[in-house]
Length: 171
Ligand SMILES: [Mg+2]
Figure (cartoon, helix red, strand yellow):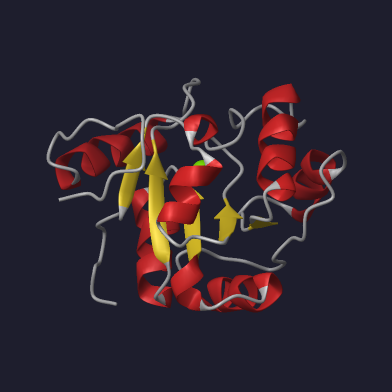
């Protein structure tokens, strides 16, 4: 706890992460944000890239669950081809959803990592819940002005650091 807005890892994309890297870090489960982490926020469906990521993780025994602030309708449409467990009634960064997520994955908090694109929801919530956090550079789309404003604030908090391709511990 007490890490505030600092992510443990910062990647340019979640899709390049290897099972080996996760296993080396002792990560056995991922809580997944949807919007701008797995797909652009206007895209309703999980695409081939998401589907192959999910099956690659699951075949290796990495447990996955969706932790998203999106509407239940949006989540269920997206999740139709994936069939992942969903943490319902989440409101990141509040701890309740993360606690449900930890219980759903049935792993120790230390073995779980939240993957998301927003410091003030995904990462802050993960840090408060005592799990690890992986910030990904958002999949780019046209975002509304208030989200762009938040992106600027995120850049300031990340000190202009660039995301990496591999799972390095953030300094
Ligand atoms: Mg997001």
